Amino acid sequence: MKYKHLFGPILSRRLGMSLGVDLVPAKICNLDCVYCECGRTTDKTIALDTYTDPDQIIAELDDLLGGTPPQIDIITFTGSGEPTLNIGLGKIEKFLRDKYPQYNLGILTNSGLLTNPEVRQNLLGFDYVLPSLDAMFEDSFIRVNNPVDGQKCDDIIEGIRSFAKEYKGIMWVEVFILPGVNDTPEELAAFKTFFEKVRPTRIQINSMDRPGTCTWVQAPPMERLIEIESFFKPLPVEIISRKAKEIDFAKSSQIDTEHCIDALFRRPLTPEDMCVSYSCSINEIDAVMDHLISAGRVEKIRTGNRFFYRVTELEKKKRGL
Image 1 (cartoon, rainbow, N blue to C red):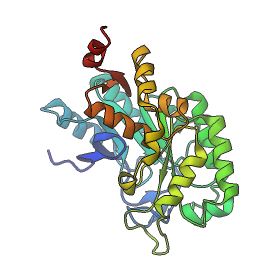
Image 2: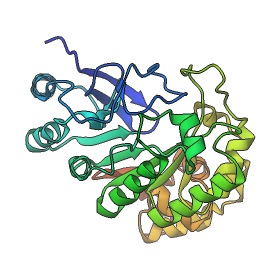
Image 3: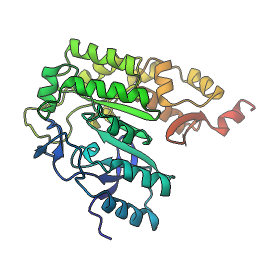
Image 4: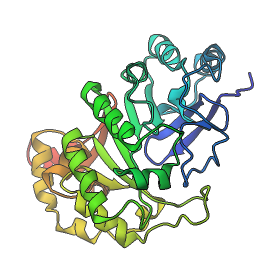
């Protein structure tokens, strides 16, 4: 079968080896974000509809996964437009849960439809939900996200707030930083206050590193992203821009590695657990853990849909355990 609605697997910066599922044709969305790598929105709408027949998508998934399936970490609902616009989303999710429960499910959403109880219900069964929140004030929301008529910044904020109260899985909220637009002291303070109340699993700071839809959009200097990351601490925060790998994690040397080892002897910890405990970013924790993994003292394991760090058997033997 030639797959029209599936793509990949591709290596995702955030989710590992991902099989993509495209639920709406290009480019149907409720927003027309200035940074979108998929291009300008040609059909701006907030109406739920069967934009792509869910039975077609189910047939493709069944054909691929029922044979010799590819090596994947997750099935991710994303693609050319806003996936929650497809009214068949819940049907597809239920099919995968019933027939292929071994796979983690994730979805990327711009959060614009989360005020709709039906949409929130469709997302509750996902292991990972990655909503976006690019503004706390209406003027910056319009400049960054260029919404469909009638949609307000408060819709996005209230939708995420409502969903966070109901959802029990992993929620990573992405904030796309546009210098001089949504990174003022007042807006960053509003972001932090909101996150302190909502408590997402992670806050992910992103910036322009691919061609967007508007040429005026520029990436902030990495130093500015680090400042914003530091401002959000001790919340679980990380920089996910491609340039993040170029950061010299000098600050990570200030984390007491032996203290980390002692903590991991007592119980495995998630990266989010550790960055809150040590008032640092997930980037810094990962830098320290990568060093300890290379030394054979720590290993990274997956339990269900979460990653944990724990000490190795070799490290236990060193302590006579």
